[in-house]
Image (cartoon, rainbow, N blue to C red; front, side, top):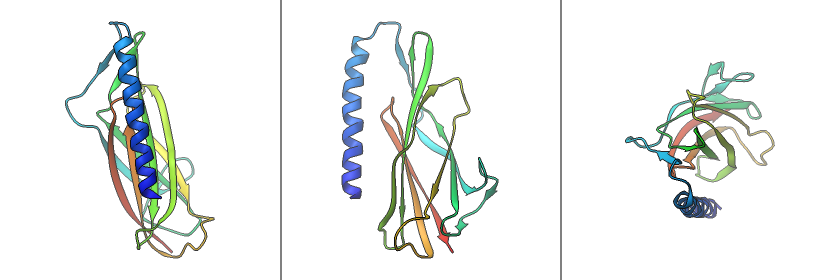
Amino acid sequence: MLKQFIATSFLFVFLFSFLSCKNLKQSSSKDKTERSKESFQITDLKIGSGNNKIEIEKTEFKIGEIIRLNFSAKNLIAVKEKNVKYYWVREDLTVRDSRNAIVLLKAGIIDQKDLISRKPLEFVNEISLKNIEGLKTGNYTIALLVTDMIGFKTDTQALEIKLK
């Protein structure tokens, strides 16, 4: 299932890249893509709990407790169209148990296109492992795959959590 998800994700990025490059060639000379010399990356990844944001950073959770994740994205590529610069970020997330089996897959948990002027770019999401059949206490890994949809770059990070 993970191999199928990864293959589908790469196919999507490839097709989007191909179509976007074709559209860029056809766009006016005033439209341009601005590129950073540094690579795209996830920064300031935090995990914890809270109402609308992370109020307490922690890595131990009760089964069914809301888990909040915050991160920033560095070196996004922005596109300028009609004097407006924007970015587009997508996040996919998996949770794996200690045997490396996927217990939760959230494709496109974030799919955000917005003005680049809204910096700093902090992304917030939440997950719950509440209704997962056969879920037991123990150690789990939350992995994020974040994609700069305009720059066709990805970065991954993983966090270890414990369910009690």
